[in-house]
Image 1 (tube, rainbow, N blue to C red):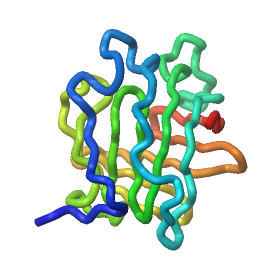
Image 2 (image 1 turned 90 degrees about the vertical axis):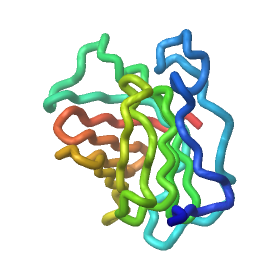
Image 3 (image 1 turned 120 degrees about the vertical axis):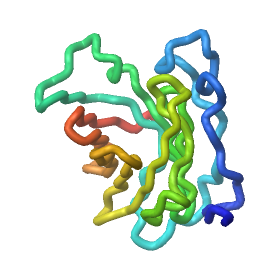
Length: 166
């Protein structure tokens, strides 16, 4: 069965070893070129999370993360079209063809930790929040806007606030 894809752009995947210069730490790599057209309309009820974002505040277990925590270097770009979301950051390209809550139309890629462990994730928009549910894992990853910041909550592991840098 063919996957539903919002927009005319084909589904994209993380290249072997992650995008960019693989000799660099994954948080130091340049983002790949824009994939989706910024002018494409979003589906009804889908919040506009588009932009390039950089971590400005990082809490681990409710406490400010130490200065050497790797996520302080994290930046990401979110692209959207219709009900589709692409999150690029940390060396991975995570393309959710349609955030309709199904694994079939969700993410089929690899984990950022090693660029090789298979990952399947369904996603939905619920009350202005992008909720991603990795298959077989008891976690939810959420992104939403609060004022001018993007909030990124990774289950109980961490909560980050990101500022738009582009």
